[in-house]
Amino acid sequence: MVLLDGKKTSADLKLEIAESVKKLKNQVKKTPHLAAILVGNDGASMTYVSAKVKACELVGFNSTLIELPEETTEEKLLEEIHNLNTNKDIDGFIVQLPLPKHIDEQKVLMAVDPDKDVDGFHPTNVGRMTLDLPSFIPATPFGILELLERYNVETSGKHVVVIGRSHIVGRPMSILMSQKRNAGNATVTVAHSRTKNLKEFTLNADIIVAALGIPEFLTGDMVKEGVTIIDVGITRVKDETKKRGYRLAGDVHFDSVSPKSAYITPVPGGVGPMTIAMLMKNTLLACERKS
Image (cartoon, rainbow, N blue to C red; front, top):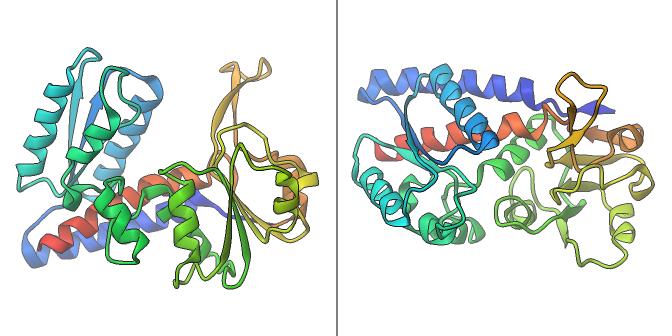
C-alpha cells in the first residue's frame, strides 16, 4: 500500500511554482497576484483563506484579502467583484464559499471574469473543460490528477467510480478522467446518494474517488484488492479522546480500506493540500496567459 502524500507533493509543486515566479519576474517584470473575497466569519472559510494567503507568500505571489461583514448585501459583493474584474494588476481571484444565505451564490460566481476565475467554477471554464479546451480546472480535481500523475497510477482503461456529483469535485472529476490525458482514458461511473446497489459498483472499481461528504462511508467490504482510493471528504467527528474534542475523518474508513489498497490518500494530508497548490498553479497560468 502506497500513501498518496498530498502534503509532500504540494510542497514540491509550490517550489516549482516559486521557480516559475522568479523567471516571470525577470522576464516580464510581473508578479502573479491572487485576491480573495471572504464574506462573514465562518471558521472553516477563515482557515482556508488564511492557508491560501500563506501559500501566496511561500511561492512569491502578491495577495489581497477583502474581508466583508456577514450582513454585506449582494449588490455590494457584486461591486467588489466588478472592481477585481477591472483591476489589471489582479491575475485571478476567488470568492470563498459558502456565502451567507441572503446572497445568490450562482449569481456571484457568474459575475466573475472567466479569465480570472482561478477556482474554475464559471460556466465558461466548465464548458471549455468539458470540450477539452484550455481552461481553469477546479482546484480539487486538478490536484487529484496531479497526484495520480506524479505517483504514476495507471488510469488508462481502468474503471473509475466517482461517488458524488457536486460541480466542485464529482462532475468535473468524472469528465476529466474520461478524457485523453495522462491521468485519464478511464471508463467512469458516477454514483451518488440515489444510486442503488452502490457496493456492486465499488467492488468492480479499479479507482474510487469518494466525494460524498459522509464520514467513513466507504468501508473495506465495499472494495476489491489492489484498488486506488482518492478520499476527498474531510469532516470533524466528535472524539473525546482528542485534545480538541474531535478528529478529522474522510469519506473512507481508512483502517478497513487501506489494507486492500494499492494506493490511498490519507485524511488529512492527501487531497486537501493539493487543492491549495493547484489554486496557486491556476493563478500562475492566469498571469502567464496575460504576459
